[in-house]
Length: 330
Image (tube, rainbow, N blue to C red; front, side):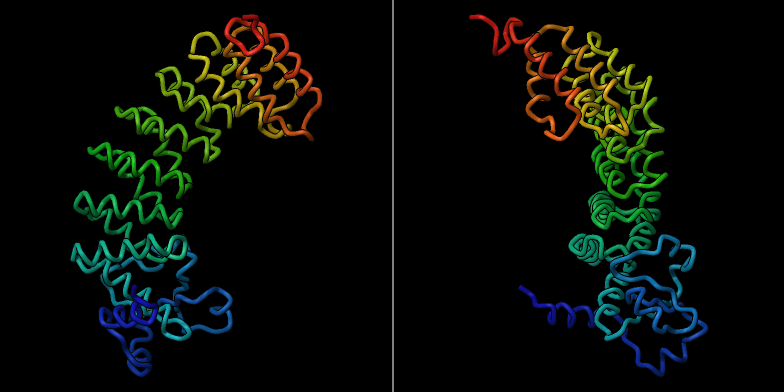
């Protein structure tokens, strides 16, 4: 296995290192990229240098360095971070598929610390890559969790290849932001069921409350995952609407959303709403209702509402004799 020293040596071979005198001569003409941390930058930096730490991407960097073909001088404190940053950026812009893939792999391993490479990866995606590299580039952006990559990835949520669309939707759930939410809402009507389900789940995870109406439409079109996200996001009449789906939508689908409602904090879903849910499930009087209520009973936090707990306990007892339930007579 290569040591950090070996990796540094390999990286230096692939980049063009310059000395202090040449760097000084380029001041005022080339873009200088400072890959140190913000606290280091504040202690002193080169004139007009762009701060872009390896572990923290400034989301407006593409506006600060609009010309990606222009020379860029990368520097840090000791020369180690700048070597790795310059190496990654050079490989990404090399046009050589093997080097690009190698750079993308390094970004993935770096996770959030690889965020400084996102603008270069986004540029590659915008220009177009072969399918395997396209997927690798999208996944690399996902591993950085950088919102700056959402717009580039969002375009691929409409790709002809459903595999790429699925990967893009999964990554948008991690990169977040308005561009991600917009693309995910559109993906709810994708022809591929996998894409629709992943988009529905992602919207719940992103707390995209503006998408509740879209999620109900998706639920009407049998996107089962939409129910759980509605349960995570609904308020007032929206929650009542989900509860009203009992009997018309499969029980296990609706209760996936009701379970989410019941375990949201009281400030989001009050006791009255939760007792209403328990009462409606109790009215069904079925074995599956009993099993659901028992599951809720077993997970209910000890320090949560005793009023809701009492309602759950009573509902479990009331449905215990339902045919097929654990308490039903044999």
